[in-house]
Figure 1: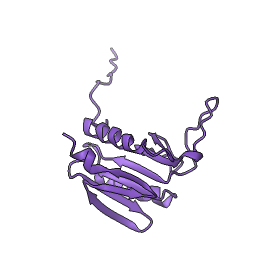
Figure 2: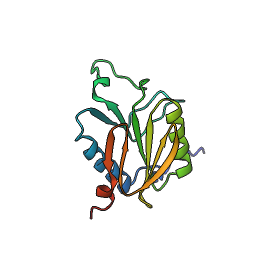
Figure 3: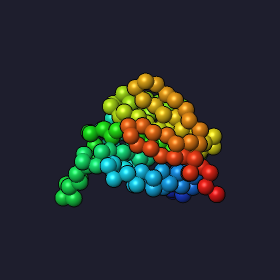
Figure 4: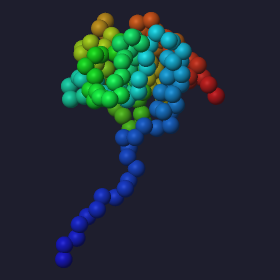
Amino acid sequence: MLYLELPVNKPSTEMPSLNHSYICSRTLRQLFENENIEALTELTLDIDNGLTPNICVYPVEVIHPNFSRDITKLQKMPILSIEVISTSQNIQDILEKSERMVKAGIKAVWTIEPYTRAIFVTNAQGENIFYSQAVESEGIRVDFEKIFNRQ
């Protein structure tokens, strides 16, 4: 008799967490206040085999959706991308992803690490670290103190 082993429905350790979702949501709230930019979530960029940052920020005049024909990998690079590290992710892997995005033409990548409330800013000049404070790149500003200190 042949038995097939069916996959067990286990919760994925790869799924974003509450903190991850909360930080993305609160970051987007601040970004949406700037009418000169378009902040897009989970957009796959044409880097390597496709990289998908949590948030991509473009000048508003660059984004022109065509609802009759979609694009699955965008070739035009954003001016800023934002990554929020989940508990299941390795910070080294995400920082290496940030470097690949900068090499592909993204002017700045913010990597947010919730546990230490650190914001790593990667750009062509290298990497800087900020802690629970306002960060600005390419004229785009988010006050992470408002995000992390909200109780």
